[in-house]
Length: 392
Image (tube, rainbow, N blue to C red; front, side):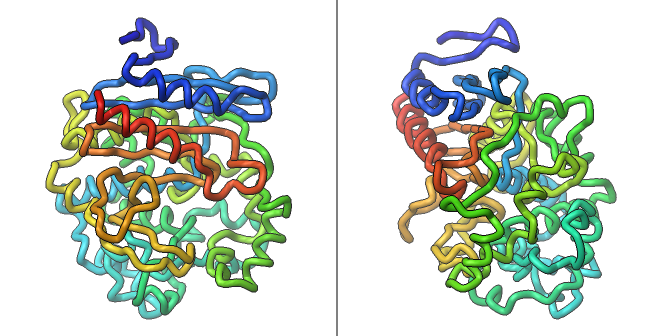
């Protein structure tokens, strides 16, 4: 094993050298951008590497962080489970028990379990608030609008991926039961005790220079995000188009995004912080002497809840409570072993209790040439890492 004598040195356990070769192949040209990869095995770091460029002509560094999009949902979910374990949340209680305003428009019987499995019927962000895109930087306004909104009737039959709204719902639930802002609870319950400080939503001003520049501008098959969304509304993917507000490409490019708390979208993480959180979840809930969650909680929260065609994504997703299976091609019979959350553009993190391995990956290169959706880099890395962990 090559060990780190400095926090700025890269780390490669020789058993995972093949994985690092695969990672390095992703960032050979400036147009590939950059990224970082971290892996823990049985609670110990075995990979902590980075490559490529954080900004034009600026190499990725040991302290570079990146916006990880829906990877954020796995971190928000873990915090909800932490509070549930403390007795503050009951999965089968209505959300309105903790958040009375949520009962509006026929949502009084929607449970926390349903919310965590994308069955609250609140996938729509497009049209939720009238007026300019700037309104979506107002977390409280978005959250209040969701509480007042009627649910999509399909939530009674199957899941409907809450692409951005999931984070607002989770953050408000955390705030209501704890009496404290979401980001403060995250800091004290997870980030600080796990030495995973780089789990940010409202990014400190002093740390913003570390955020890698995301590129290219969001497009789908060469079309603008708005044009592709308009086309989707005429297809069976119409619900998917409703998950983002008009002007979404401008929203995520605006620096004001880092003033907001949108735990379904705007998490800014390091790969090692992700790997440490999931490293605890892959290691009986414990890392570095800190018990993040009990084993029985992990077993409960990762039990498959839904595996029917998701009305937003239009394919089957093996939803556990706030996580999906990894990789995302399980059979109907197979149990979820590895679990976590991928993000738009390719970032993600997961835990695999079967091997004791966790992996965190962040990148500023948003997907391939055609689309930022369905990026395969994390899937390839996770499959290689899983094989190596099984042989270790």
